[in-house]
Length: 98
Image 1: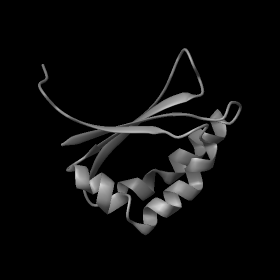
Image 2: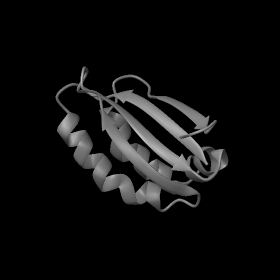
Image 3: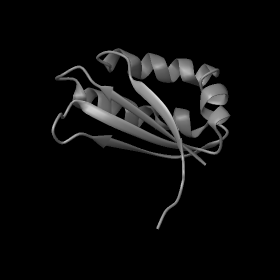
Image 4: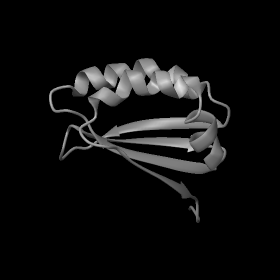
């Protein structure tokens, strides 16, 4: 399993609208083959900063299956105009857990 961590800043004052928009868009990402689950977390110190944690079966499920799909274009149209700057997206694999 792969963990995608997307870190981004939402234009100040648009946080509530963004949260509503991404909640409405969850079925888009959930419909993709290889999607497992997600969590959205908001920064306490900087309330317009978020991390979106998405678990995928494989790296390609995110980078190919989702990113090259028509659903991604819909996702992007609904959400990317809220971002201040370009989000940081990184992928992680589990080393160990307790």
